[in-house]
Length: 452
Image 1: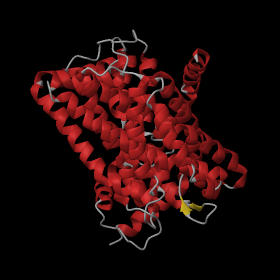
Image 2: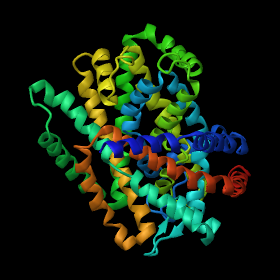
Image 3: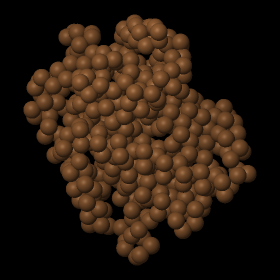
Image 4: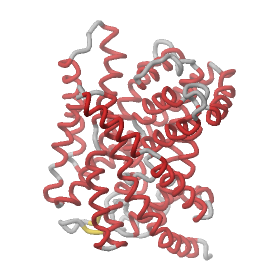
């Protein structure tokens, strides 16, 4: 087991090196400039699309724009926003938050391009159903000679779409908030028992397919975002004098890295970019799998809706978590478990009720992420072995929920980072190559929308 842990740690360090950061951040910056900062110019129009102003039930696809964004957010707003942010601050210092923000800004452009392409170049699976995602974009737009890149994405996606991390943290917070206070000690049996309950809930939803996942996500996602934001705002209101210094500390540490890494600014940037990718997954390629199922004839519309994701996910939710950890002073406690650190912040900020509120948020965040990732993994496997057999992925996935309840957190996180890093290469390479196609569609779309 030690050799596996070492291998995964070394793999993360190798994959998340300069080439991938240049591809994600540099590629995203290129797309932002190439689009003439379009993600920031049409936010109002994007919100109108999300509200259903342009919905047509006769359009091709399976779910509405709102359900597509909710489903994508369900898969991204999860433990990366709560536990992941805490881990980023613990490993890279408060300055890592700043680089998460920068990654989110360029990530808006990346989401716009990747999700526009997901609808623009939808293809049919082995059963004739219309599908979207990086593998279909590569196959339909770049041709058969690029198929190895599409297969590579799906193999990495199969391993990246795992519920192990979310399950692991759900078990941790439930034990920390509920079981430990009443004297029930942690054990393999206790962990597995919680895992069985989670697996049962997951099975009920994901075996109903994308429509049930979309319906559940569209109901739970708004609830969990509002509850979490209100909770952190309450903590901020009770500590008003710490708010501005915390933001200034984040900016200062982003360029000095003195808080944790002793001046290694490059390491802070890596930590921030890595955690941002884990949080909003811009450029990784998973969100296009969900947005590719949207009911629309206009690829640009779905791209505009998708670009709202990093704003909600990273700029709002991750910032809330980070500020909560900073203003309560628990960030330098030496705690290595992200969810325990965040729970400590909620206990300090909202004595008595804080950990309970966090547990509710964590349970909803994590379970909706598990729903979304199940759909992503199933689509990746279906592309490789056919839709008929790919459906059996759900049973494998439910078994992984049980594994997650008793697995090692470090190894789990590193495995996901490896898979996410590998997925980014085919996604970003194909997106940069096909960027002119997106801009052609963009100019055509807005000339028609605003021609009157």
